[in-house]
Image 1 (cartoon, rainbow, N blue to C red):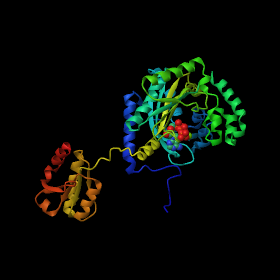
Image 2: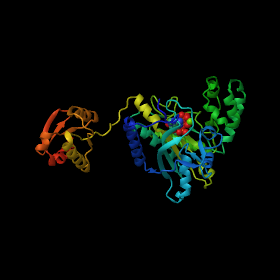
Image 3: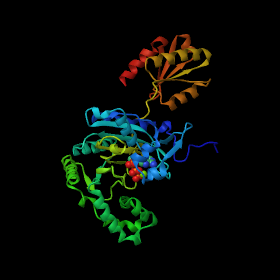
Image 4: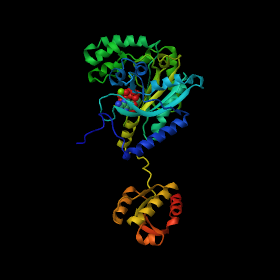
Length: 423
Ligand code: ATP
Ligand code: MG
């Protein structure tokens, strides 16, 4: 047993997984650029109170899942459990209201939540996070939704569809919550302890309940879409019209809500064949009251976040291939001490010319070195034996073809440059 292991719920991202991470992050950067979103990086920790306000008291995140600590100077800090609050803090701090609106930003990075670890659920995980701030237009809702959609499509997921709902706003939501609570009071017998507590603290979250016995009751619960004010109803109708126009399939899911006042109007998730059934890959929505709750002027916004590990897990499950690790052009295999000196110089020249090259270390037999070249996936092994060196040459062995030719030492770089250009 090793003395140390990675902390529970965290994982090392090993080199063999790198091709997936590189591919997914490259696609995400490309999609963000295509839609005109700019990269923003915010600190991994912020003042604890920012998240208490921005994520909200009464949420699982704030109540149970934050990694909060006092640093040695006595400041109360928290490892970010989501991006949005930090990005909104940055929007206010840097006066981004004076820029053309909407300000369209995206981020990548680790997120921390003390959850119960299981497949696809970790305590440190990565998100790709997108925010569009300062604009009410429902066309922006559909643009943000399309960023998520296009990413999954580009990654090769089929059968995409949206689940959408409106969560209303502080004008119309209270009336809905009243109706929901009244309805649940008639069905107390099927509610578990957790759900009874939710009924008191955060009734909207009852719609989220996973308790099997409660499912028929939830299915027949009042729907928020029957309670929307004109403004929210019109907004929702326009979102749906634009989605129809773009031929993006969606289903209205009355159970999709957020429990907090500053989440308003549109909420959405993306589903794909084989994902989203138990665990969402992507969650998003409007938060027109958030910036005000953080002390700024009333400013609308909409965004989403998607978990990179869950995307990669699903790609692997579905056998979606990604481009492999770039292979070295050359593996330089010297024999003897003289060969090692020449090899060190050659590998340096190859790298200076931009050709990925590896040097064999130690003092191994030619056979062992060729095996290593093969394992490294090198296109050529460059053999520097006594005979070759005596003639100022190197033997270039094409690993896949098994052919070999001698090239003058001073011509090796040019030869390989031309050769790799032809590939
Ligand atoms: P879930 O319902 O699965 O708990 P969530 O509603 O908490 O998800 P969000 O807060 O909307 O998720 O975060 C956006 C995305 O981040 C999720 O869709 C998911 O892909 C990813 N995610 C959330 N929590 C975790 C976690 N603990 N481990 C890995 N990925 C996560
Ligand atoms: Mg969660």
